[in-house]
Length: 114
Length: 466
Image (cartoon, rainbow over all chains, first blue to last red; front, side):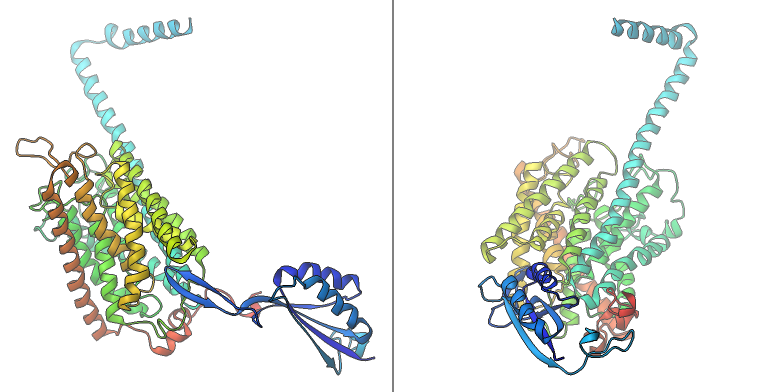
């Protein structure tokens, strides 16, 4: 069975609803990272004692999930519907082919290891 | 009915005490005993307040100033910055016991104290009536020590993130003896040139250390910033505070501790302490508002760091005035100080492009100077009748009471503090630079002083520390 990795960069405030929706469609594992970055969204300025600082890398949440192919579209839909506000800065989803998955505990391979 | 029975009981008791069992000689003894007890009670009350004040002023350095400064630096320098303040609590304490207290408060010349209190000889339970007649001299000594600790600690803000710990320690010992001790003696010591209460030739009003603490430390800070040069990358590389939260907590502790600093400077627990307490609080509140307003107008938003910086600026400026001014005058002083220090920090520093990293000069040097001068304007004898004419009558203090001369005296005090700070600091920096070297190597500065100078990190990064 083919496997795909979903990497989704989303707004930090959307993590809870995205996570719940993913569990709903049958995703049972994920890795969540606190990251910083920007796409088309502009940063902001901060002032400390009159000195101006431009902050263009904004805090985001990155989800990494590896799924059997038949689950991928459902999961993507769950992320898109729950992370969308319609404004710039909502984030992106990237899909990549995965060659192999190995469960460290018992050496299971492939989709069985997911 | 109850009131009557209590009165009757009191009369009976008084009768037993005075009428029935006493003869004349006994009465005199008893009165003398009673007077002694009243004096003791007053002394105990004053001593309690002064010990609490001493603890409050120590709290200003650790954790107050350590947190305030620690939050303003980058993560890699948080511990080294906090330790520089904390180290003063140890180093200056020992120095104070050996010689510092004597140089400040011994009876010497107009400029420096004598050596009679070295190793704290004769500094015990008996009061030193010249300074504070109702508390043990040991209490007075330890209270003044807390000022000697925080003053050099304030300077560390100017050379943060780039000075060697060893050089810093030696610098501070010398600075304490060469700059702080003469200034403290001139303003507060018996026979000091500027001492308003103890017959100085140029009576200057400095209730809790506007010139002694804030002008000396702030101006020395500027000299340090200029002599050491900028941090690598400043100002084009960003150096934002790593935790305004820490600075915020630190500033709140400073505000509370400042009640010990200013109200404690009454050296007693009476109404003068209350008056200084109230002036301190109103000054801090007013400066919080004026700094925030200036920032709001200029940047479009009021910030937490701005609000707490304003409070500290107000506390600095009210320090020399605290025991001489009314609450309304304290508000005026605070309002002026908040805007003035904001202007120094946000505008002047950028214009002249010096790296006073944590604004020790912009807040303490500038705020102390403006506060010392405004004390000469707003001091009134109704609050504190400290100046007397030849026949012992209380005379006018500040400009608003018609004593223009006082403003000149204040200016002289400020100039002396500036000159002493500039000359003394420059000489010490040159000496320490020649012997030890002041700055850490560039690679240490980039790595951060916590690791390079102390072999530790403020925030565990290693996965094994999870």
